[in-house]
Length: 155
Image (cartoon, rainbow, N blue to C red; front, top):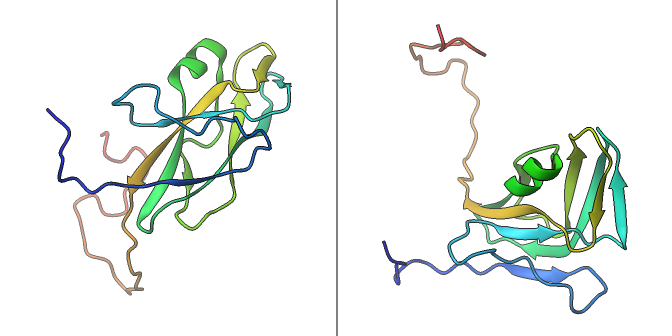
């Protein structure tokens, strides 16, 4: 399958928050990678104790076009090898947010984990979202499942 030349080109605008003018922009690790790698923009390094949660800056803010969201997901290698992941995954960046992208990291390993400046910790996937109108109804349309909740379809 080849790239479609008639596909709409999506432009993401980034604003540098980090003071280092050489701090690299989020980028794909390979040509067809779905996500842009997000790296730790910490001063030096920080250590997360087992079970500790800490907000890690990335050094970048961005402007998403209307009708898009940013999904922040853990990098699988970082999670598998180090036990570092995101506490809320995927994290959602709303289209109207213009602040710094930060990562709510948690250490799920049994040992302290150091995060150094430049460590790739997460990835940013951009996806279209519907922006529906909402209405209140006295009754909703029926289905076979009805109000069956958690675990109700596995019987």
